[in-house]
Length: 156
Image (cartoon, rainbow, N blue to C red; front, side, top):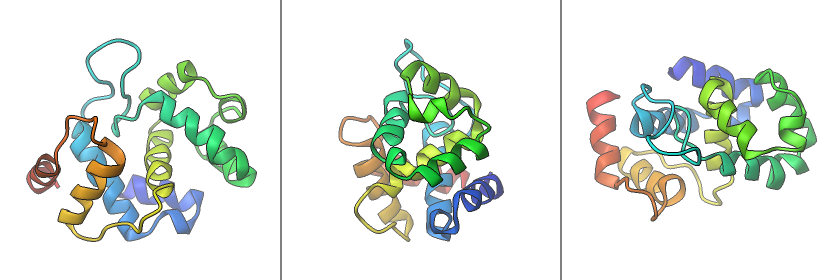
């Protein structure tokens, strides 16, 4: 999976594909789904994909980030083989499906989610666990720093 993550992020641009970014994205997938689950148990408004991203996050990335970076938006749409409309007029219904079925979109949304964090990427497992909890899982999520580290050590 590391190769797929690295290759996908390099397609977007080398600034998105640092070693620290690739490792953090990979470890996020390990912790969120162990690369086995594509959706949480529950209704429609649940996290999707290997990185367990909620559709509203992808819509926010389109509306609040990519909208102001048209060349990156176009590149991401091309890389993910998605119609431009999913970025210019994103809907949670569309992104629910995309995040469940499109691995490149899953990877890019996870990376862009971290990209918007106004802090440097962490380098150590301990720091990655804290960063993931603060900025990806958040205080509302059920994950813990210890859970992150345990899953990574067991699986990664």
